[in-house]
Amino acid sequence: MPKRVCRLLRLGCALCCFAGILPGTGLAQSVPGTQDRYFVTSDGVRLHYLESGPALAPTLVLVPGWAMPAWIFEPQIEAFSSKYHIIAFDPRGQGDSEVAPGGYNQTRRGEDIGELLEQLGPQPVVILGWSLGVLDTLANIHVEGDARVAGLVLVDNSVGENPPPKPVPYHREPPISHADYMRNFVAGMFLTPRTPAYLNRLTAATLRLPAPDAQALLAYPVPRSYWREAIFSTAKPVLYVVRPHLTGQADNLLADRPNTQIAIYRGVGHALFVDAAPRFNLLVAQFLATQVWPPPGAPPQ
Image 1 (cartoon, rainbow, N blue to C red):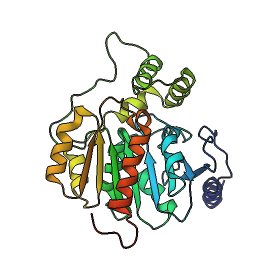
Image 2: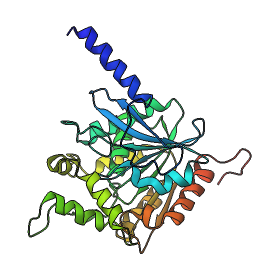
Image 3: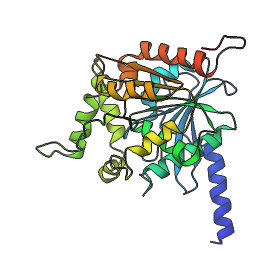
Image 4: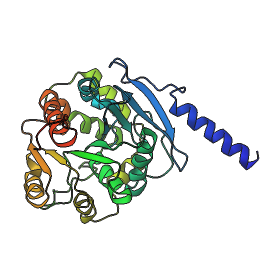
């Protein structure tokens, strides 16, 4: 087939995907008005996101953690889509996005977020990244700068500050299968009860990502300073929400970096935005309304 025809076919496919013509699996359609959207990256990978809320409202982009699907943010999609334009992203290999043959490194994942933002238009957005999504968000800023960013909400991962967190190995002793590891990992993310159906659904979503690619995502080949450089390279407002094991980093970030707000959540699991959804949503709503998009005439905070 001629190269020009191939390019035209690929462009047509990308436009159809972006328009939502190609349906997704509908995993998060319990929130009324939420739509599946797709785009094709510069390296030819078809990525998925969920879109909800008024298209002309300020945009909040949700980036999930390691192997997780976008629909895990269902409590936030439901809470914020009446006022904000919500984009819940499935990174490559996750959720309804294509399981690509490569690109499971910080640079490509940061570029993927940048190319998602290009699809959304010129207005700066707030990015809410959780777990590995924190690192992918900071990688985007490291690679592309902060021109498209209005603010950051970074949830329960290191940002390269001191003290460094204790390393967590991928496999524990005795060795277990990847499927069993992911099943245990998913169950361990919550301290509030989740139904077996919910946990099974979430585990099944994580297992779309092959074990070698999952392991690659836990071994980004950059020093800890990479993440600190990224967060200190921007003056945009940051909300850093973590559990007690990252209190030291939170305190140092608050002391060292202007325009930073921190919150320490106790008695919750790693998926604290699910475990403590009402409290978390109120915190984020206050951050957006006071630090990022205050109403006209509001006094500076």
